Length: 309
Image (cartoon, rainbow, N blue to C red; front, side, top):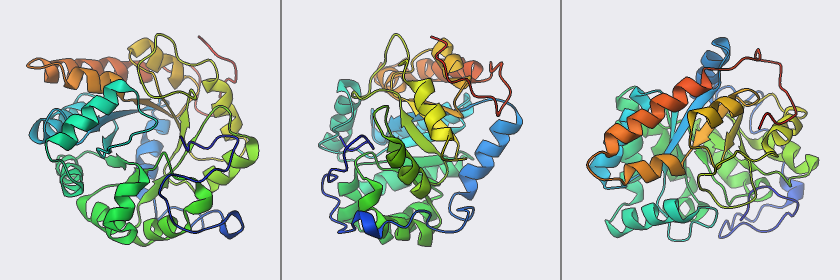
């Protein structure tokens, strides 16, 4: 797993050839042009003194038409942003629920062009979307081509969980040229220098993984999440999104007290695969979570460092 932890290991298949000494931090001064869509979204939620709700679903699950319907329903029911998953054969940070969904989508023939078409479907419906993908599919498609095609489809950015910023210079250049946001992950064991380096190359928001394990719903949000967010705020003004494990409105409300976004994946995926009642179940969860992120009691700018769990 190449979430930004204590080591600077090589990300699987990145092949960019960049070295730590070549990392120069921000792609462009201020980064406003790169992430304008996401900047507007978080300005809106901050003005409303609430966190954003981000929902995840792989393109092509449970099938391609229904994945698009469900993603649009998630937006209509309260998700401010959707992460559209790129199905991949070796999803190393994903738990069994998401792995099974991605395998089903791959078996059905879901391809990169289908993912881009799903982004387009969300954008055409007035939603905001980013793609979450391991880096190998981007390399196979072509970095500049993927960034440009995603921008043309109306996408706002890309989350790459297995790419570290030390090796991301060509990808950052492609994102800058296409004006989409490169979004990187940090984890509880990330040292401060890695958080600072990762945040400097991120745009739109910084993804804070609340645990070091794989994705999946949990009964309680990790107690390390508030501390990780507080550490991130020491080195960046980017919005901080917390993900991994959220499944209830209560958990969403808890995270919304200290984070700028609550990211929910496995819970949506589970309901998306539940059969005839999937759409009703997904919209119900989105509405519950949306109510949760609107229950912030602490003004924006006041960020408690202790856990409220």
